[in-house]
Image 1 (cartoon, rainbow, N blue to C red):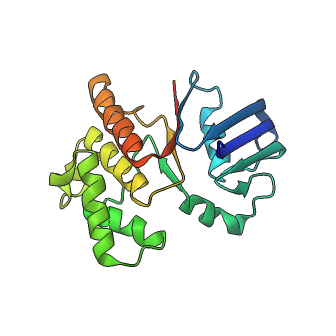
Image 2: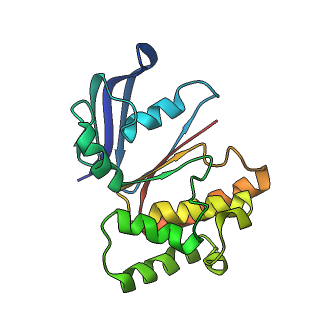
Length: 200
């Protein structure tokens, strides 16, 4: 039997009182790898913000990783986000700490306690995205493509139920984008992570 990780039914997405998207129907099952493609300004980011709790779902029904979106309370949002991995266009790495400590920070924040298991996991995910040699570097010492691969490693490190990517190659040139996406697809398949990516 298929297991739905994300579902929306007759959903409408608003930014304040402005209707951005209407009548959305989608069901994504465990293990699926899905692209949503649309031109700039068509509401892709608003769609993603609704999924991770930045925008409320005011109309229609929807559930994500076991959370009901219309009834999602502010106090539930940090717990929802523990189950999600999110990769942003602008990396959102912490520039005041090394790559290794960026990943440690996320694992600590999501409830990992065992230091040995954390070390093993960090080594594992950095290897998956080809960044093992860069663990002691700081984000500002890396290229854009390298920073995005670290951001991918960070997002999968906590073993999320669902990985979301919002225009994650938007700031990269074509060749670097291809390398980043190859690393991402490979990591998601190896980890069996359900994934939704938006891109133009």
